[in-house]
Length: 161
Image 1 (tube, rainbow, N blue to C red):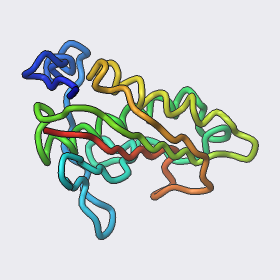
Image 2 (image 1 turned 180 degrees about the horizontal axis):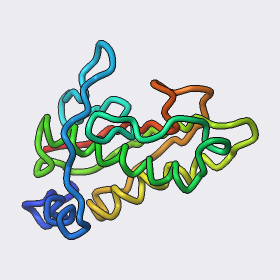
Image 3 (image 1 turned 90 degrees about the vertical axis):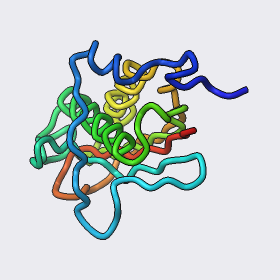
């Protein structure tokens, strides 16, 4: 059994984004020698996305210290939206079958253990935009540092038709 896509009874991601008052941003350019997303077979692998809007990193710092868990959860939503933009630019959201796996990385202050709740920001955004197609397996881990001093980073594996 295959999961339905937008044209076959699935959620219309474009319509849901509009209903939620969200717009896909411009794809964030890579910070080093990689591409934002690559397709291999029926999967798109999205590179780690930071909470960058209009070319600017919104926050820096460790979650549980300079950045609250609530702020980091909102930043994770932005990472997820950036991931959808990368998928859109490579193959189009209309070809999206399912978000398969999300990797969430949280730059954590010593003793901070709320990484799963922070990455719920990304997971919940995928669910709001994609419905059942947005349900996924996930990792949420604390790390010492992230690129540019970002508090959160999200990468994605998506199935496409």
